[in-house]
Image (tube, rainbow, N blue to C red; front, side):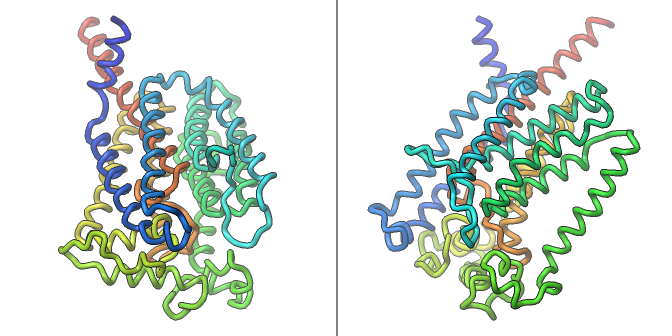
Amino acid sequence: MKKKKTKSVVVRNINKPLLIMMFIYLIVGALMILSASSISSVLQYGLDSSFHFFKSQIIYAILGLIGFYVIVHVPTKTYDRFSKLFMAICVIAILFAFLNGKIFKEGINTVTLDLGFISFQPAELLKIIMIVYLGVFYDKWCNKTHKKNSFLIPLFICLIPISFIVLGGDFGSAAIMIALVALIFFAIPGEEVSFKVLKYIGIVFFILCILFLKFAYLVIPEDILESDSRLNRLIYKEPCTRYLSNSGYQVCNGYIAISNGNIFSLNIGGSTQKYLYLPESHTDFIFPIVVEELGILLSIIILVGYAYMIFIILKVSRNSYKLQNSIICYGVAIYFCLHIFINLGGVLGLLPLTGVPLPFFSYGGSFIISLIASFGIVQRIHIENLEEKKNREIRKITNS
């Protein structure tokens, strides 16, 4: 009876708008991956079926939903017990992937762990584990259960796997992680003088780093930037004037795809740029294909839907009764927002390209599993918020 009651509480208290939005974006995203990869899967990758990436994305999404189901039934009080363990496992996995990979190969790489039957990017899962780990730690620190000067410990621990990811060449994931850790740290409440000083120094340094990445092409000589395929991504202005270079070809073809999109009418399956003109059309550069096939209006609606999901997650964070849960939800919102902002910024030529996937739309098994898992954590926290609110109201009535 107790087990049935627990299940009914989970179903009854789950955040239905967020759940519905997640499923809509999973379905639309998978269909767009099918359309965007139908040509390249055969002609570029030499696969037997044009449905290859679509079927793989569906399988990964199902695995993510299984994890989602498990996560919404696991109380957040257990996060303290498991966060350090999962953090250690992820660091070890990244170390193995790093040692077995082609570390110093020129270009943007990903630190991938090949298990034979499946390859996985532990950096994607680490992003979520870091959010939970930071939430657990700083909740205890703010409640004075850790030493007052121990606030640096999680920063150094997070820096270890990030360093391996940078050395492995996955600068996009490293940038997301650094920004994620920094923005969570800046949001932590604390009265210690040393903590406040470090926070303000960190904020200034963070802003300077963003400005450097934004305007590096004005400071660093162009011949130096062009000498390395990783550095030339910092040259992102006026991409169509550099059509034959790596730094301009992809973005310029993305512009062409976007310009082909109509405002109202649909052209589903009719993209011309996916015919090998736009590299990575089903991963990093899927948004131009979305605009080309679904139109400008629906693309704007998709962006509004992203904003709505972020709003829901932040609302769950604000309504949390535990600082730990509030930090975790805030971290998930930042994680979600960073992926959208950096991906679209690179595709639209507003930021350097980093190879960051667009949530729900870009193909990627590790990313979609981690993304769905993060939504499961938010749902679990929402469920506990409603239960805690109900219990407090009952106590208030009974005590009166």
